[in-house]
Length: 125
Image (cartoon, rainbow, N blue to C red):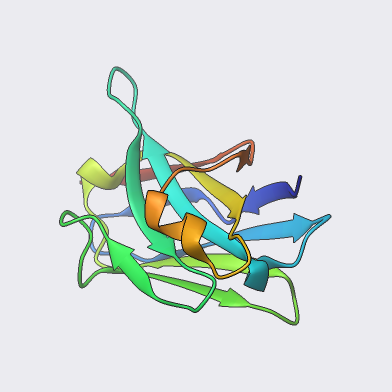
């Protein structure tokens, strides 16, 4: 089990940028499937971005071209760079992790076992 702590949320105006961080402990991020999710009040949780143990990424259509998921193995940290923010991006953002398996095969499932506590992002118009 890996422990995850997010930071970097805040309030910005439309068109602004934020970078979220997710510090992992108890596991090595390069061996985990990693993801960012968000949930706005009254809405279902939405997968925003995912990264496999090999560094492959995929994104929700709503954030493609604006958000970038990355990791720093030396810092054992996952990031989400968010540019051109819109009011509809406002939500609580969570990072998630799952051990990738011997060959990273578990990353294809896009399901996660470990979650952070979340960080709030608010985008005003």
